[in-house]
Length: 250
Image (cartoon, rainbow, N blue to C red; front, side, top):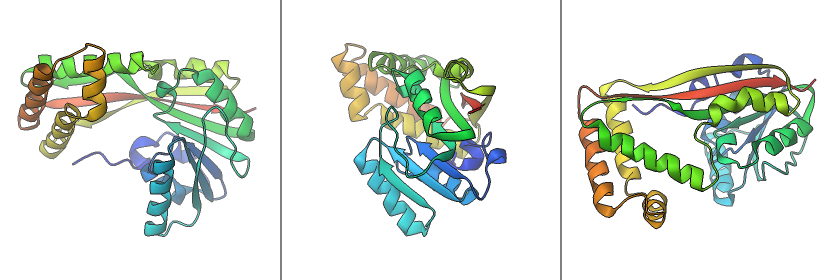
């Protein structure tokens, strides 16, 4: 099965620090799947995202699920304006996509109450584990995606930098950890492999990779076929490292 975007999976390092009275601000909340789960652990959650369509999707999900302690607003990580001062600021899969992560962390610190907590998590491409039949095109898929991230100003190796970034932004008692999300059952391998096969036909991946001369239509088709074959193999296994860090505003 696909690893759900649940708080127990993606925010387990934060959960022991949440209380039923806390106001949590979730930066880069997207469509709200993880945010709405986090809302069950706190008094109030404010989700912020730069994409209007994602914000509206999160609002609709909250209404559909009957979650009344979460609201979602459009906002920018460099210019936050939550309705109340935050007890906790959470940013999952955000800092690796920013060209000025230090500025975003300073802004997160600004909206935190004294003694408040920041929690950040970023994928770390140096922690990719991948095995199975015909690995070469599979690793080529990630080489291209890594290069596209870098061209567009993102950093696939930002996870290892989190501790230093939080300290530089003025947070104290910073603790950094790493966890892996693994795909090691038949159903998980199948869904992960087929999702990567679909990525090989994704408009952004295809158009960007070809525009920058990183791949060809033939190679994209070959990678897609390799991922489908990988998804069906009993020898396949994959895991991704996620680096996480906590820091306090004191």
